[in-house]
Image 1: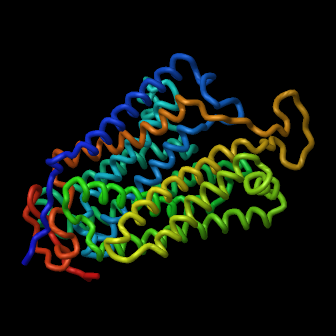
Image 2: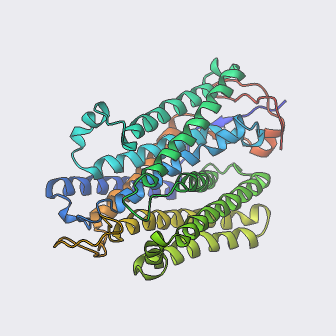
Image 3: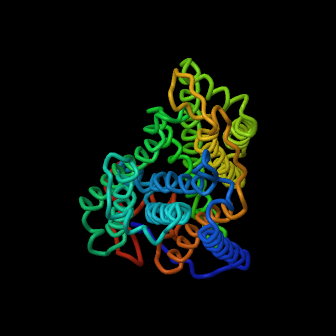
Length: 422
């Protein structure tokens, strides 16, 4: 019976080193940008008294949401007993941790005073969802690390029950984490663009899409680097189908979110602002999220040739889904703040401070560098881990999944639990 074999990333091509160099440069630039903003204050950014969460927050939330979804593949294999995904479970867990660290690094550096992080981690206001997120984020890293241990340790991997339990715990925790992230905005009743319970399931659906898109891009990149068929034709078809389903789910929840708000007279103003009258925000929504980030990649997946010939289309579609995700969060986070704040709904008030004024925001270069550095930091963590430990499947995944054998431990193979095969 064949075994699930794994490999480290031993050989590196010139393009790979160039990609690493770009990521290192972006991380260095991001740290420099954070230091620049720390020394000069947020006055050097595009943020102001109305737009207090800028582009770095968009990247941070994007990476945190994607981290949750990156665990999809591992969950599918262990929780839902889909054996074909088992060879990718280790990489799935690694990506989840790396993306979360990248997002949290951006968040901490953007908030200012990172030296007081310990205070934030030890002094809680449990009426705030932000306090709960400290537990959700740190707990996610610990649980996924334990989940990886259950898959990669020679002794722990012999216990199918332990692996199953960790898989269920990680799956449940990731749902709670993403619900908490979406609820940050859903609980903010003062902002008319937020204040919606549907943001939690919308964020969960988005996490499925972003996390899988990251997974596909890393797998295809590593296929070129290792010259190994990490995604055979069968798995390309499965990932293609999942991308389509997740993209349609995000589109559905997005439509419900906007249609329900349009139905409410109290929210029509903000909806017309985001969808028609808000200047750059309708453009980003319709062109960035819907056009480039949803319709175009769906068309690519629909009309691309089947089998390995469609590899490039799946790779391009995954990248476009990620661009659409950034556009989606830009509209939600920044567009929601730009709409004038109603301090006393239903009342007429006047003051010399920004009454009815639309918030103006143009991202500054330091913000862009800091946000992009979070993605690069996550990719560097993944590259380093792939170099040091066997996270990548070695044999053709489709063939392995059909005839897998019991686990041989960290360096050799992984257990194949009993259950349904696709």
